[in-house]
Image (cartoon, rainbow, N blue to C red):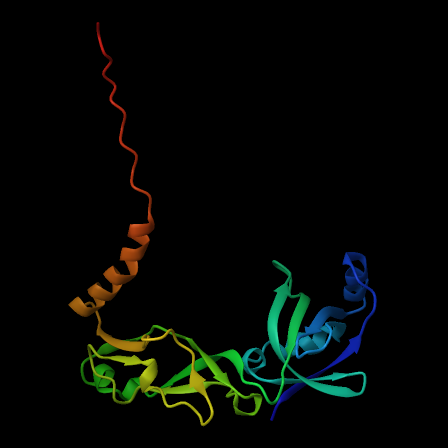
Length: 221
């Protein structure tokens, strides 16, 4: 079942118009793409706020009911107030049912507690990735991808190529790469230290070298 929300077309533009909308409990937004002109819209704040609490709202194809017409779209961006629970603006992209789309889909990890690496070796699962960029038609877009860890053993890693993807869905990765999705390491062991070192190394390499201290000696003539 696709999530849906209601919206109205709006003609007023600019910061002042957006402020007036927010004072009435509406959120200014834009609907763009799909071979049609961009359309400024507004959405009920409470409706959008509640929908944004659902994980699937960020990765699923949505139905927007706009002045009696339904269009498919994806949430592309949300602007929030720095410290108040207020939605300031949202961007939605139209979806063409006949064209493949790119979307990040969350990964749901299951059965980590029964994997040999955790249950028998006392290891710890590290989630290297939390979502996956996929390409598929709108009708095939999954709300999430399940990652089954039941066969994971200590020191082994699960790669993107090991994932069981739904029919019609393909992972988007750089040519020749097969990123690690999850791995099992021994708590406090050498494997864990190596993982920490691997994470720290890029940061250390990026840090600027300390400047050489200038000599305090003066040339006496």
